[in-house]
Amino acid sequence: MEKPVLIREDGLRHDGRRPDELRPIRMEVGILKNADGSALVQFGKTKVIAAVYGPREIHPKHLTLPDRALIRCRYHMAPFSTSERKSPAPSRREIELSKVIREALEATIFTEYFPRTTIDVFIEVLQADGGTRTAGLTAASLAVVDAGIPMKDLVAAVAVGKVDGVLVLDIDEIEDEFGEADMPVAMMPSLDRIVLLQLNGVLTREEFRNALELAKKGIMEIYRLQKESLTKKYLMYPEE
Amino acid sequence: MSLTPTSQPIMPRLKRDTLISLLKKGNRIDGRAPEDYRPITIQLNPIPKAEGSALVKIGDTMVMTGVKTEIGEPFRDRPFEGVLQVHAEYVPLASPSFEPGPPDENAIEAARVIDRCLREPKAIKLDELVIIPGRKVWVIFNDIYLIDHDGNVVDAGALATMAALNTTKLPKIIGIEGDNVVIDRGVRETPLPLSLNVVTVTLAKIGGYIIVDPNLDEELIADARLTIGFDSLGRIVGLQKMGMSGFTRSELDYAIDLAFKKAKELHELLEKVLKNPETASKPIV
Figure 1 (tube, rainbow over the protein chains, first blue to last red):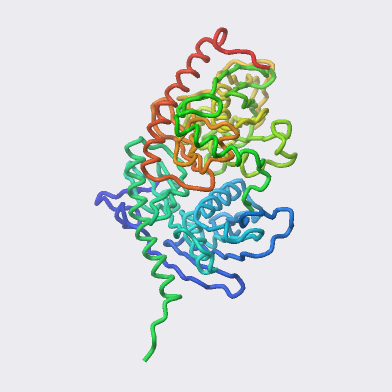
Figure 2: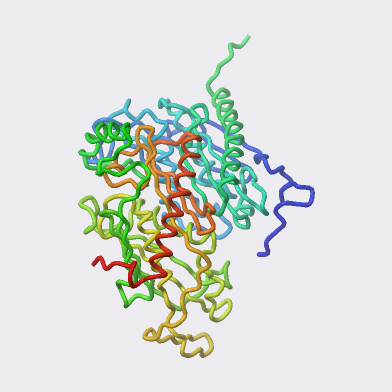
C-alpha cells in the first residue's frame, strides 16, 4: 500500500480532523452482567471492552500476596478485530501490552485494601483502528470504578503521533502505520502523574515535550468524558 | 496474562529505607553518585562462530548478544526490506529467580524495547539486505542473552546489541539459481550495513529521587523506571516506562535531560571500543 497523504494542504488530517482533535469517543459503563465492573470504550473505529472480576479469591493459592491484592491483566485482540485475522494465541506484543497496562493500573488501585485477593482485568479489543492499548486502559480504569474498587484517580490514555512532520493527537491505524512516531501516554489526570509512556518512533527532545503537552490536553478531555459516563450511570436524580 | 510480581526477594524492601536515607545525602548503596553508571566493559566478538557478537558488563550485570544471519523471505508488507528479529533470553543461570521456559514478560519487553530503538531510526539499513527483491532477503537474528543479573538489563542488552551489530559480517553469497541462494558461512566479508548507533539509558525513581543505571536492589524497590533510547544524532528513538508507579512531568523533563547527557557518554564509549578494538575491548570471559 502506498503512503497516503496524512496532512492535507488545508492542514487537516486524512480523516478531516485538526492535529489536536480526538476521534469521536463513546463510553458506556456497566455493560456486562457477570463482571463486577465493565466498560466499553470507542475511539472512532477502535472498539474495546474491559471487564473486572474481583477482589476475589486467588487460584492457584501460592500466588497470594499477604499485604495487598494481586492484579492480573490480560490485553487481548479478537481474531476478527484486524484486517488480517489475528491468531488468538497471545503474541509478544499482547504480552508486553498486558504488562504496561497492568503497571499503569497498579499505580492507581489501592491494592493494600484487599490483601490475599486478586483483581482480574480483562481487556478485549473487538475492532482495532489504532490506539487500542490506550482505549483499553481507559476502559479498564472505568471498569475498576464500576467494580467499586477504590482508586487514587482514574487513568485516561491517548496516543500522540508525528505524521508528515506534524504532531497529532489520537492517531488511528493509517497514521500509526505511515507516520514517524507513535507515543501512547496514560495519566492519572488530577494527580498529574504519567503511568504509561512508550514511544515507537523518532522525536527530538523539543518534539517530545510538545507531544506530552498535546497528550495531556487530550487526556483532560478523555477524563471529562470518563467522569460524564460514570455520572450518567451512577448519579440519580429524584424523579417527579 | 500479566501478574503483579510475586517472586521478589524480601530483603530489598527492608533496604528501601537505607537506600532512601543515602539518596537524601546524594549517595548510593554501592558508593555511586545518583547520575553515575557502574563501570562498563565491552568485549567484541567473543563468539567467532556467530556472524557478530559482543559481551557487555555493567557492574555485575553481564549480557551477551550474538547475531546470526540466514537467507529468508521478506515480510509480505515489506517486500523490499531485510528482516530483523530481536529476542532476549533470561536463562536460569543468570539469577535464582529465573526459571526455564519461554521468555517471560520482562524478557519480551526488554527485547521489544531494544527492537523498536533500532528499527525506528533505521539503525540497520534493512533496504540494503535484499537479495532477490520481494523474494529473498537477509534475516538478522539478534539474540540477547542475560548471563548474570544485577539490574539494568536493557542498557546492557542494547549496548551489547549495538556492539555485536557493528562487528557483524554477512556470509558470502556464492551462487543464486532461481530462488535458491547458496551462501558460504566460512567466508564473511560484507559488514552489516548500519546508518547510526543507538544506546539506551535507564533511570529509576526511588522515593522522589531519580538515579541512573539502577542495580538489582535499586530496581526491586524502585517506584518506576524509564528507559530512553538515543541515537548518535541525539534524537529520542524509544521510550518505555516500567514499574508500578508513575512520573510527574517535571521528573520526566529532568530524566530526559539527564539521560541525554549519559547517552552521549555511552555513545563515546562505544565509538572508542569500536575504533580501537585491540586496546579498548577487554576480554571478560
